[in-house]
Length: 204
Image 1 (spheres, one colour):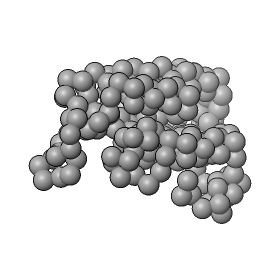
Image 2: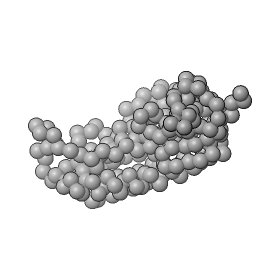
Image 3: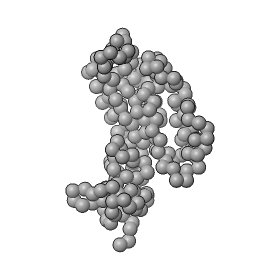
Image 4: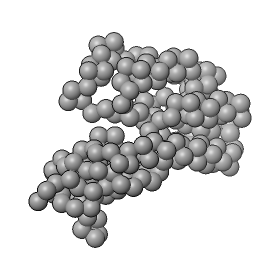
């Protein structure tokens, strides 16, 4: 909700901007957000996602969330699961809360047992894996630009599409010509939950 209106308009225009935005939302339960001292609400976060998708339909949204924060019960976690299923993020980073000595959160009541946080992490990642795979499959048969950054052990070019951030998202493995530093047209032929495979359209 803190995104300036001018930035939203700029995003909607596209141009040279990469259609990718990372939202560090952490959670959507108002109770958990208040404990985290986040100055937002679940309603605000849902509204922001709706606005971004409406103004910029081709956008790839990534979000980061945390499970196991003190006070997160099954109901609050279920609310987060339902939100992720609704939002259909292209990518999702999930972190487990880990108490650090001397922090306010470490002294809070209602600490979530580590095994419960781990189980919630697994459930949320399984949900997102299916979403990411389904969204990647939408690219099969389509052509997209790939920035070549290196090569596999077999010598195939490997790089990133505009909706794959470095280090944290998957990569695109390319069959055919392509040198590091080049942006090449690639027809996507295969899709997994994280990585894509495609055929270079360069004629050389």
